[in-house]
Length: 61
Image (cartoon, rainbow, N blue to C red):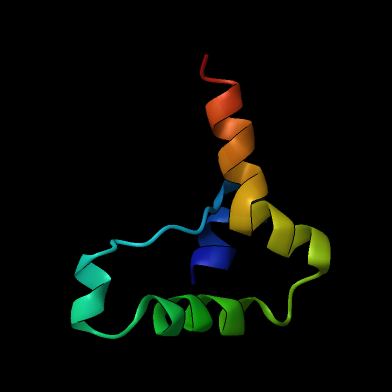
């Protein structure tokens, strides 16, 4: 749903660590995200897993 609503240019991976530890390990939480990205091209994965955040924060200076 998030992919359809926002597209890969407006999504960023983030967690609510350490709160996410109540539901599972950080690895398990990241695994859920990674599993949901498998159908996307590598360029889209790179955007979501860091590229969009870098672009956003670098342009906020």
